[in-house]
Length: 393
Image (cartoon, rainbow, N blue to C red):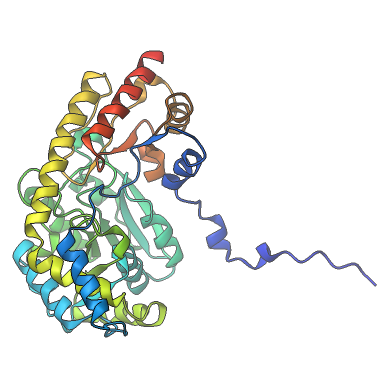
């Protein structure tokens, strides 16, 4: 009898999933976890604990026995508060019954939006450098990610010329990732006004990832959904992780036209069912009474932002001035190393972990991402190690 080949579970794993590389953010922190005396300025997570009044509301909901499923789209009271919040902050009205779904983090909202809109072969435009999940989620939805390289000299903005040159007959969707992770770049009202006519002319949809909308340090965040004719073309993604320091609560939401929202909800129903109940009660409290918390944390981030940017520029590491999120994206080109080499050596020699720019797309080569979602004391200590590394190289 002919000998059969040994059984290999890997042969059964989806080819697309096999070929997607693991997150470039996590790799360095997995290495750092095995080392002693490492300072990390890489993870995009607030160092603030969720404010007590928000935590206590979650505890209260558990004490009252609120441990059952909610409606698939989320608690109606929460959706109503989200609608009020969006009307006040981005001046767009959403019907809490048909245009809002509560998700397990903004990441689920993004994944659901892509799967609801993208069909096999559709092209999805992604300005880069940008968050690591846009490309893989596009691929998993059957789409073709099309990176658009943005430049530091333009503030890492999506310019009309870049957008127009990237659009083809297959373009279905634009991901608009502002305020931007990893660069800290923002799009002003004027910037957005220049790309809106191009979007309409090309007849494409937009997913606007606004998870860092509260962390804008010059003026107010402006959503592309506010422009005439853009609400129905835009899926607005947001959540509670960054503004309210609620990363571990895993709660986000999507706002969209009822036709699109119903498709996202269908995916959410079958894949998730509903977000955690106690997290939703905590989020209601956050939206009702958390404005002072946002302002307090934002003020502290802004102090750290200025401190870090000034220190990096004094060190000779040219740094674009970020006006959003809580990251800086300095150039390391003067070191004549790749981003990966720089981060590897910095970790080995100085026990300092930052993220290579290439984790956010090929256009991130020559840069590293440094987070200031850490205490000023930790940042100051890290800067001493970075300065020593710079002198050595």
